[in-house]
Amino acid sequence: MTPDTSPSPTPVAPDGLSRRAKGFVEAYGVRVPVTDIRPYRDAWIGHGVPAAEVDRAEAFQERWGGLALPPAPFYEGGPRVLDADYPEGSTEEGWSFSAGSCRFSMAYGFAIGPGGEFGIEAYRWTPLHASTDGWVESLALASHAGRWARTVTRIRGEAVESLDLGGYEPVPEVRGLTDTWWRGEDSLIAVYRGEAVGLDAPQCQEAHVYGGLDEWGLRGG
Image (tube, rainbow, N blue to C red):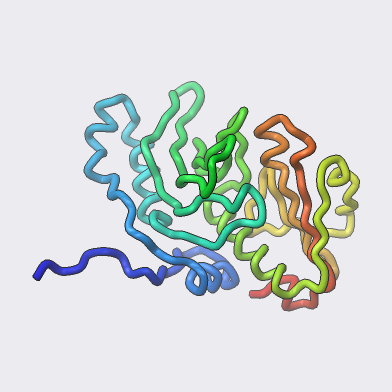
């Protein structure tokens, strides 16, 4: 009998995540089979992809490949499954590779940028978080905040610019770039600007305000 070498459907969260994100991945994530990209290494290098970029794709696949997480509250849910693919780019512009296929037909895709950023390839490359860890942390925080908040308010378009964040501090674990999270005395605010920047469409920016949170709701580990 051939031994079953498929991955366990129950994922083990990678090292380095917060306790909140680790619990989110292991409670709600599923690990599914994806393509082993290691056999393509020589062919990709032969087509001009630098070995260091193949290394990055392999490292991503080792850490995140095959992880399916619940839908994100924006970007039509994010990638269906985290999954690396053929790196594209140049020495001048930098190299990126796909972070996984979309859940729906969309005007952009998800990618890992030259510096390891997690972002969208739209009208222009738009990094959302400084790493895939940051993206996963943001998913975990949205799930947690949505469960514990007494109110959830969505603000769209130009009104996002009117948000007063003076009494808030950035949430560092999400490693926010274009997208950011902010923590106040009793609320969390998620600001999604990726589509606005990537599609040159200011009306697409959105903020989610999670109100009425206690200390546990604000941090959740």
